[in-house]
Image (cartoon, rainbow, N blue to C red; front, side, top):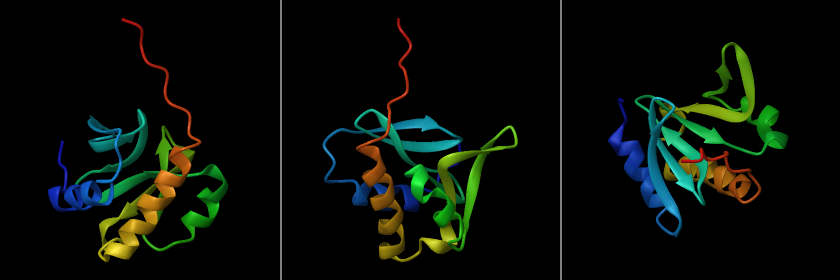
Length: 114
């Protein structure tokens, strides 16, 4: 699982104020879970952001952004952002804030019963 540790550390710093934060391996990278919900992930070349589906289409118009797709079907509310477009702290913070804003309303995945 290749993860760009520099970007992962930048995300950790941006999320340092979050009390219920957990890191998990998923989506071929490191995922930051906030309040037991997927928030933002990082791999070796981009971040995966879980955002409000209402801002999904507008987000796709931003440079360096592409939809996440599963088996050829776009997943509304999930976008990848290329590292070249989050070099500045304010650019990364924009995406972190979008993810955190939606996290308060996002549904948690159903946990498997043991």
